[in-house]
Image (cartoon, rainbow, N blue to C red):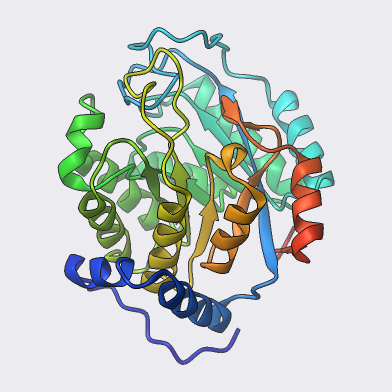
Length: 323
């Protein structure tokens, strides 16, 4: 869509905090006004995320039921075969998803038969005419290049939170490791999907710091997922209270203003959100969701509920090039 807005990559945290703290009506108005200059306000991209390898992850992320450090009831599953992944991708396309993301509970990608199998999955998804996305942990420049050659459109690697709070959530890797993976992906010509999680006990300043890091990238991440923590029994964050829905609205609006050309994805936590909360998030600039009844291993609204919501709000599914 036509726009005269110059994208900024030098947002100070103080500027973003001032935006976040605006009266809600003004904040949403500014975000929606900017959103309309870059996107169709009535179209939402549907994406599907499949766990292709589940559990036994060596990382100790406090929010994640897939960590081998936590005593959850999650059943471990080895890497699924290529045919199984493509059957799921075909079903996702038929239900209206234009992007198919494959997630593996790995700390990092290791060269070998399993990585070759994921590359074959990527080729298969692309052959279906869908956008292909992966989230596999850390990748080297060479591995990112191999993913790009297979046709990968996007790589998800969330920052999770701000730099100062990160070490309180994860100890098995450093913030810089995440930034390096994003850099490796970008060098390979693959678009970046990177956002974070709200409701892990972080402060507002930690949330703003995360947005400042994301908005400081040039170019901005093409996709910015904003997740609400889904507390899982057996994880260190199992007793965290649900985040205030209006916090999600503020985060999405601030992300939209800071990164107006990006797709801002209303991600984990939608099952606990009312239709009204989700509508406010769309009004604030969210224009993508994960579809289906599972988001890796946590619950997600099913297609029936999403269809009813879209019908109620008059929203349409965004069709993307090649999908």
